[in-house]
Length: 111
Image (cartoon, rainbow, N blue to C red; front, side, top):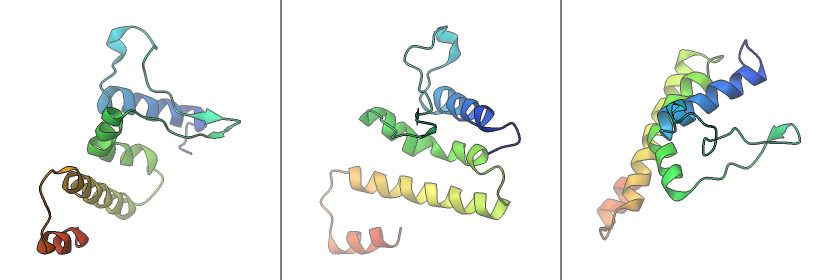
């Protein structure tokens, strides 16, 4: 957990997800519809997202690296950013409607 403790960490993640990933800003003036950090019985619970929300997470989850890995080295953070970018690229390939050729499959495996 970050220096501010678990509650501060949860608040930081919720704010990042709502403001910068899902676009559910506080300007709307209410909590209804804003994403909440899933906690059940004092533990992180299952994250449930709509298809649209899941895609937004995939495309913007790089912004969570600074928050979630703030206690780790810059090298570790950079490795996670690179991983997130590869995951995003892989997701884009899988979502495409083109028919894959063998060379495409080989290229995909190198992502």
